[in-house]
Structure formats: C-alpha cells, structure tokens
Image: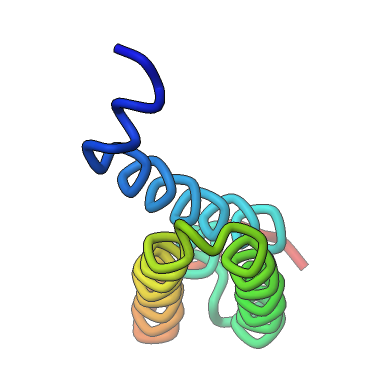
Amino acid sequence: MALEKMAEGGASWGVAFLVSAGIVAEIVAKACSSPQTTELNADKRAPTLMKWVHIGMAEAALFVVVAAALDKKHRVPIILGGITEGIITYAEYLHGKSAGLASSEPGTEGY
C-alpha cells in the first residue's frame, strides 16, 4: 500500500503518537536512572534521581513542542503521545520513590 493511502486512512496519527510517546520515554531514560533504581536507592538518592527526572521531562517537553511546531498536520497526536507517555513515566518514578522510601530493605549501592 502506498504511503499516501496509509496516511489518508489515519495511519500517520498512530505513527506520530508512537513517535512522540517514544521520544519522551527515550529522553527521560537517557536523563536519569530507571524507576527500579529510584526505588532500590531512594533512601540515599531520591532527591538527585527526581531532579534528573524533572530535567528529562523538561527536555522531552521541549522536543515534543518543537516537533508539534514543525509538523502542524500531526500536531495533535504528537502532543497527545508526549503527554500520555510523560504522565506514565512520571507516575512510574513517583511510585518508585514512594515505594523505596517506605521500604526497610537496603539499597543496592555502597557508600
């Protein structure tokens, strides 16, 4: 099937949504440790880890906004994908922090 016909059928919305969601996940993952690391070492590192989550979220938001500005035709799914993945990723880190601070288990890092 020609790409033009796929786009007419709405396929470009799905691709734009996935690309936007993927870029948020990639940028946040690049900018900080995983939610599991946050949970395992929250007692010592929660403030630093969450600082980098916030930096990653700001960086991701910038990329999503630029992409939406450059691709006016797909602006809505780009923004929706970015927001959706941003909410999911942020919730994962908040849960990791909360669970880690509530846990009496030792962390995985030595100091």
